[in-house]
Length: 188
Image (cartoon, rainbow, N blue to C red):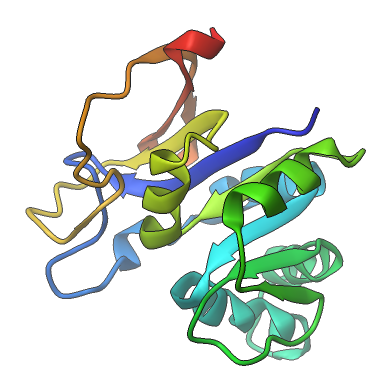
């Protein structure tokens, strides 16, 4: 069965963007970008909320941008091939290799998990919080960047009860970024 992996870059203090709404500290250097290209090769679907979908649309045309590096062009082409499922009640339509879901998230995720294919990567704090509350996250991949943001938007939402996790991997990546991989404790 395919897994849902909630994955984003975070500051050491747990934020996906700083108090000013920026996350430029998470821009990967070329070596780290190569790693993300490899992850993209193993991605079966992107699961986004509206805001991240709108930000990631950059990759729909980045391969045609003369200022894009070869690594960025490669990532754009990889990203474009992977289907994107956008969960939003405010968007009217999506473009490219994307499909809009406005209905029952849990039913849609159950349907997606039952299909053959590679694991699905979930991104975006708002939709991530919804998936967590519904118990739909199979793994958490936190890419911890060596910066203290001091505030902003947290990776993890406020919850009614703790979610116990089991560490399944740590890895140091280029640029002093640390990958922390967890599963919910009951899945370990």
